[in-house]
Structures are given as structure tokens and as C-alpha cells.
View 1 (cartoon, rainbow, N blue to C red):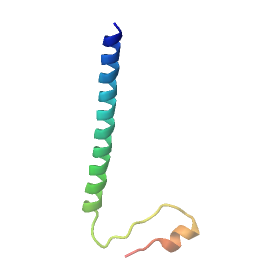
View 2 (cartoon, helix red, strand yellow; view 1 turned 30 degrees about the vertical axis):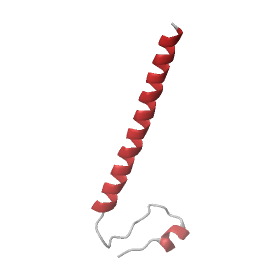
View 3 (cartoon, helix red, strand yellow; view 1 turned 90 degrees about the vertical axis):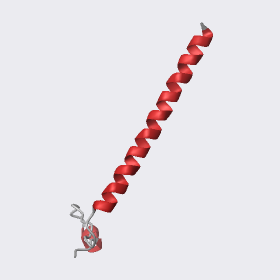
View 4 (cartoon, rainbow, N blue to C red; view 1 turned 90 degrees about the horizontal axis):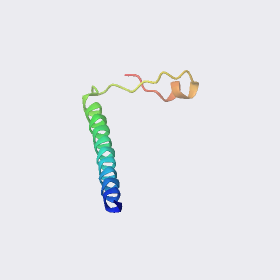
Length: 60
């Protein structure tokens, strides 16, 4: 009985680790795709109304 619980726990740990790794890979792929599909020479914009953000934003 003790070995069965240990095996189930190890299986669950393995599944969780696999799920977390897959989540990180998915996030990384999405970030890379978004980076490459952004049009060249387009400055990033902010929706902030702070004066410091307006000074730093670059508009082309």
C-alpha cells in the first residue's frame, strides 16, 4: 500500500513538472511570435497617462 501511494505521488509530481514546462514553452513561443510579427519601425505605445511615460514613448 505504501509503495502504491509513493508511485502515485511520483506520477503526479511528474505530470505537474511536465505541465509547468509545457506552459513555460508555450509562453516563450507566444512571446517570440509576437516579437516577430510586430511591424518594423513601429514604436511601442503606452496607455498610461503619466507624464513620464509620455516623454519616453517614441512615435514614428
